[in-house]
Amino acid sequence: MQSKAKTVDEYLSTLPDERVEIITALRKEIKKNLPKGFEETMQYGMISYVVPHKLYPAGYHCKPEDALPFMSIASQKNHIAVYHMAVYERVLHDWFLKEWKKSSDKKLDMGKSCIRFKNPDDVPVKLFGALASKMKPKEWIEIYEKTIKR
Image (cartoon, rainbow, N blue to C red; front, top):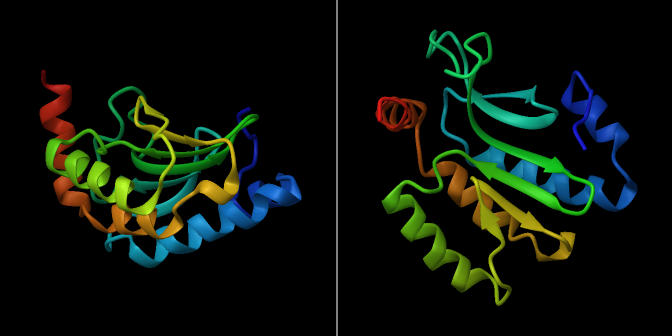
């Protein structure tokens, strides 16, 4: 379910009570750890952290008027979703899998840059804060540009 909210506060106000707490905790942890240069916004109906046009004027190749997406969090119909556009980059992916095994005994439900949680209590908030801290905007731009040129 894609939200029509224009602001993060509006998005949060539309969530069911049982989802507000986990989305708020994820947001706080990501913002605390995200390197300088990324900006929080609403993009594609989710709370998103993007490389703004002032740092990357080309924008997202699929829709250049949009800032380059990096990480998003959302309350979907049947799960909590954390999207990380660079999570499949080899070194980061290996780090994430190793840390996942340390932080959770649950099976990882991950695909297409999306990590899904049916139970909000299973979300390893601190791990996502650490994941957010692992890449600066310039590094993400370099990886992104290599990827779209393939």
